[in-house]
Length: 210
Image (cartoon, rainbow, N blue to C red; front, side, top):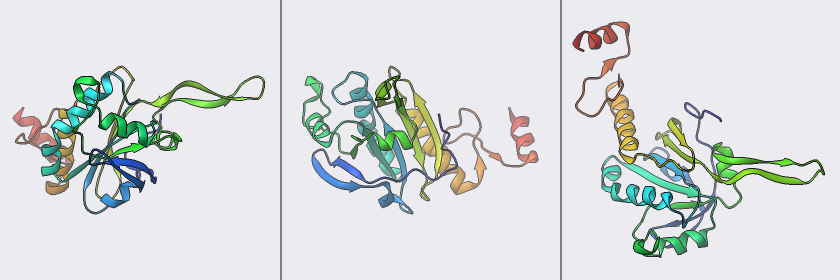
C-alpha cells in the first residue's frame, strides 16, 4: 500500500452530492487549496452497517471541524444517485439523512486506486480475460491534507474496522499546532499538553519533565 504522507494528494474531478442532496459535477479538492485543511476519507459502500456509524459520527462533530477551518469530504465507489438516495433515507431506516458534507462518487474506482485504498485489483485470468480479485470497494482510508494540498497523515482500516473521529480531530489539532508554533507533538499529545522543540535540546527538555 502506498504511503502518500509528504506527497501531493492525488487530484480528481468527480460527481458528488453536497448539502445533503445537491448534485455537483467535477467536484475537486482543489477548491480548498490555500483555504482549508481537508479530512478526505473513504468508506466501502452506501446502505451498509458500519459505514453510517462513521459518516454520522463525522456529521455530529462538524462544528468541531468547522471551527478548525477543516473541510470533511467522504468518498465511496457508489454512484451519485446511490449517495443521494442514502442521504435522503431516514437514519432509523438505515440512512444518513442530515449529513451535509460532500460525498464523492468514485464509480470508476480511479480515485480509490490513486489513493491506493481499493480492496483488490484488476488482473488477467488464465484465459486472458480481465477480472477483479478482491473486493471492488475502498478500504476505510483517511487522509489529512494541509492547505498546500500535501498529505500529512493517513490511516487505512480493513473493512470491518470503524475509525475514531476523535483521533481524526486530534491529528488536525496536532498538525495545526505544529504549523502555528513550530513545535512537534509527542505520543498521545492533545491541546494543552507540552510539546517539543524539534532539536536535541528540546527533546531532552521534554524528557526531563516526564
